[in-house]
Length: 130
Picture 1 (cartoon, rainbow, N blue to C red):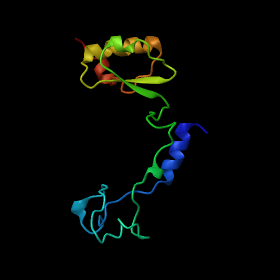
Picture 2 (picture 1 turned 120 degrees about the horizontal axis):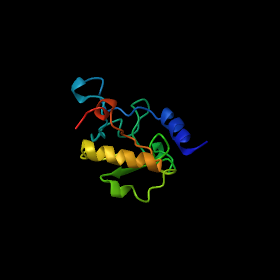
Picture 3 (picture 1 turned 90 degrees about the vertical axis):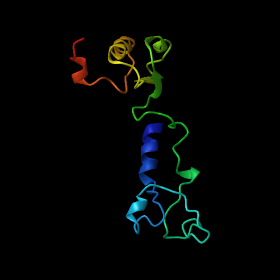
Picture 4 (picture 1 turned 45 degrees about the horizontal axis):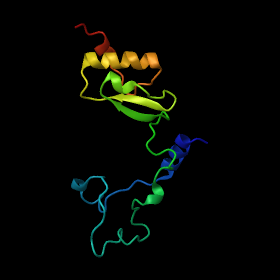
């Protein structure tokens, strides 16, 4: 079993971490906040009061930082930074601050080198004329 499959299986077992009293006050939302109260049952790990995030719930070390496709991500701002990237290990993500024309050039060079682009241009952007 590879690291991605193992991470997926383990994350399926992980409980949902909910804020204390989330069901009582809708303004709290379902986001996690650590319990701070002196008499807090959740902070004291009383059974039936919910789960607290701990290091044991983390991903396997081999899968940490991997994209779901199995590649490591590299952020690209220009064509020159594509040099020396191994297409078997890395996939590229074009920075959000890169414009349409420069992005088109980066994607063209990436395709020639066999690199996977994690955030390719949309089809509507490809048909826009200068």
